[in-house]
Image 1 (tube, rainbow, N blue to C red):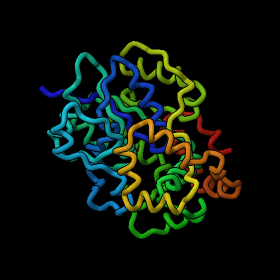
Image 2: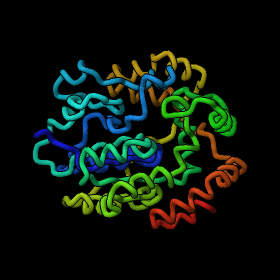
Image 3: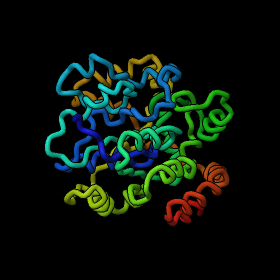
Image 4: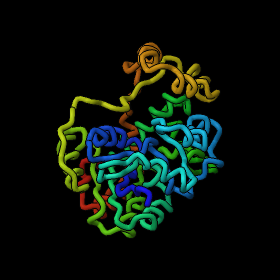
Length: 312
């Protein structure tokens, strides 16, 4: 019988899932899919409908990828073939916690139901970030990958007014932070004892405590982590127009894929600037607080977490 994943990190996007994944991946008792985000259960998100700029950033793993063993590590794809999905877990040996980390699963209307049909004993892990900060971090990522060259306020207004909406179709800067309805699908589908909801600020302030709690949740021995490790630190390209050309043409992804790691590191030092990262303006923060207030209160009630700091 093929190995089945038994836990899923479902998001939220830009809320610390990569850090969580990197910390947990150090554990000898945990096996993660070589594709960090296979997005197999978000069946309502169709890559065929993606806008061209997002499609160029997404490597679709097909027969060529799965026929080359061992499977190459890949950040993100949209696996739609059942045989391919089970191949992601063929290399499991003695690990008892088998998982993957797809941030579409929180946003998807279908993923909770599909995961439950696949393995009703699955354990679900979500990490949430203040939706105001999450939206701004999402915007910084859009600047980095050339999806936008506008100011934050102009970018979110443009996206809100876009007629076609959806993952890979519009940016969803604000929609991805509306956690209540997204989480409700999981609380309706799974026993609450199968769900853990963490906060990004807790992961930043005490990552060891969070990882120890997750180990207990997954019924594996706790491990010590290096809390100094930082992942996905915001960086902005020194030339936004050059960056937009590189990524929208697909050249940027080609460089990332084929350059040796030592050259990637040197290129990043020259290409990106942390000093020029924009700051979230007070007026923009207040605008987003008004937008999210009701949903934050509903999310607090659903999860039993004190989210009052997000409203200040």
